[in-house]
Image (cartoon, rainbow over all chains, first blue to last red; front, top):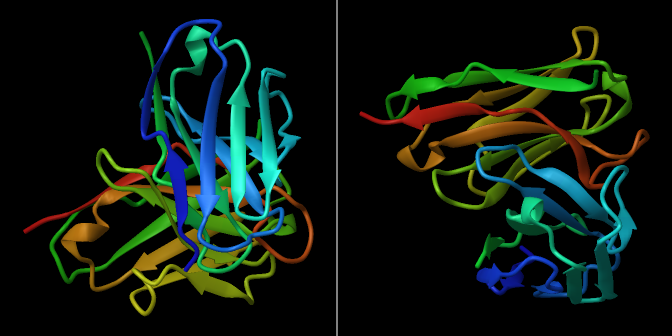
Length: 107
Length: 123
């Protein structure tokens, strides 16, 4: 099973700050890395698929990058509505796995 | 509009069974692979199972293999999760979610999610 290690687990952020969340895979996963946002008491939402493809309707301040085993979700100029938990997921090999999540809170 | 609605959750004793359903509307249900994902209270997301768009291919997380069965009825636009031999650690919100690619195969990222149904396993 491929293990995804996200960091940080938690981050206190200020509006307009640039936020970077990392996801490291225990082995190479090619481009099969996706990012989700889950706001409190809501279902997850797809943000980015295949490392860097923004899903329809996702604000342009969200972007993804990386390759092989190291991946990054970047939020440029964070807004209050971005307070949420962010998860990476790999679908390179079964069983599909998620990272443990990164929770963002406003300072 | 595009919608997935789960049902069938509840409180059940350890060792018993439960069947979850997911009703799809506003989308071409038979075109995409479908997944179940769960979230234990206060915890992160755990992928549970996936089925191909024709229902022939099915894969499971190790934690549920041999106890859970995913199935679908494309004529009814419905996805199911039969859960047997339930354990306390199966307590979670269960979400159904659609693979984002309309075509063969699976594992394209999940672009449509239901609101979830809660399963509580407790004596």
